[in-house]
Length: 221
Ligand SMILES: O=C(CO)[C@@H](O)[C@H](O)COP(=O)(O)O
Ligand SMILES: [Co+2]
Image 1 (cartoon, protein in one colour):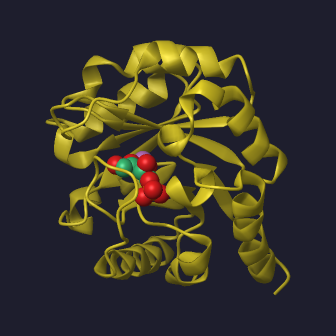
Image 2 (image 1 turned 180 degrees about the vertical axis):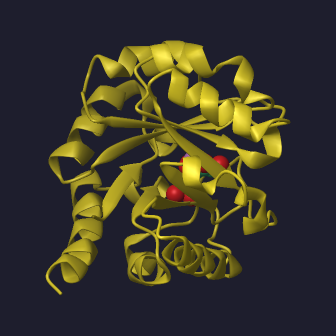
């Protein structure tokens, strides 16, 4: 199943509830929440209080992308905000397997993200434990960047690896994803697409529907 997960980082925060509702009504399946700590990435975005507050607006799947150092310190706190999926960066964890166990013990689905320069081998011993792998298609930290093409090769290789191992795990892509490159991204093997500026700049309904039209082409095949 193909899912659009709009990143609220690009939304107008004075109209957050309305804008989330608009993208959901037009077909978005998840809501992507980018948490940045000013250490793992240069920017600071938002944390638990914001997620807890918007949890009151919708019961959609909350897909929380933690761009924070040593995320094991905060897993239980983010689980309490109502997160459905928590994704940590392999590069930010000293004991990745332990952090994955912590996420699952908190009753939340576990995802691991890889930066563009991090090889798939970083997932070797944990892949079977995961619900989702996030292949970053830009270096994390900012919205509005351009997709780095070689990252799609990684998506393709990961899909093959999963097939070999008989696994059916979601592959999410994040960074520079637009309706105009969504076909290529899905063909590479991704099934959860994060869209920030491509969803929230301009007409949110039309932007979301443009992704849905691409998804429909695959689902009608
Ligand atoms: O995690 C990140 C950035 O680090 C993303 O989720 C961005 O927020 C996506 O924004 P666009 O590239 O789609 O504008
Ligand atoms: Co993100």
